[in-house]
Image 1: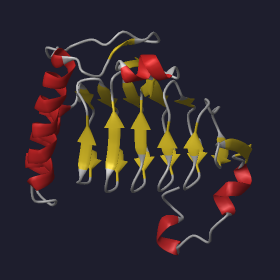
Image 2: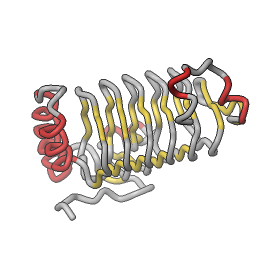
Image 3: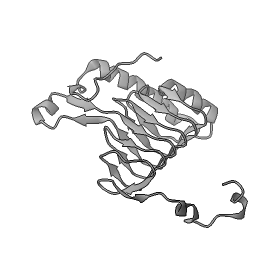
Image 4: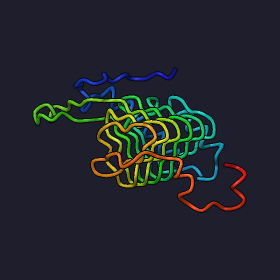
Length: 202
């Protein structure tokens, strides 16, 4: 277990102007900076650096640079995870990704919410709520997943969505705010024509 500073969960705390948190974030930014300077095809060095940044990481994990997070050790990534360029995770609370998760370019996962009251906000108060992404989830390009959200297994989040509330398993959801459009069905296997070389694999 890595040494870490634990932010209180689901209640206001002194998130801003807090030297202890700022020190931890600075350490993580240094690591992200080094990660983003690596050759994008140097998978061995990337894996080694990600092991220093992330709290837990499964096998066959690919995070395409640039990648930024706040603490890193609050992030758990399952097996066969792939994110495209420019994934941002503000992990004041735990952010968990299941197995076989795809994240398209320019996606943001943010556990942080600032106080609504202006005096509390000016004083640096914020709240951290965990995010949970299930297995076999696909997050479309330019999507933002907000604090406290859970996305169920097998679901698809359409490009450009802002996910403000939890999404159940086995659905397609899209929009601002993101809403369920329909369930994923057996007919979706036939949505696209399949090349002959793939037919024996599925």
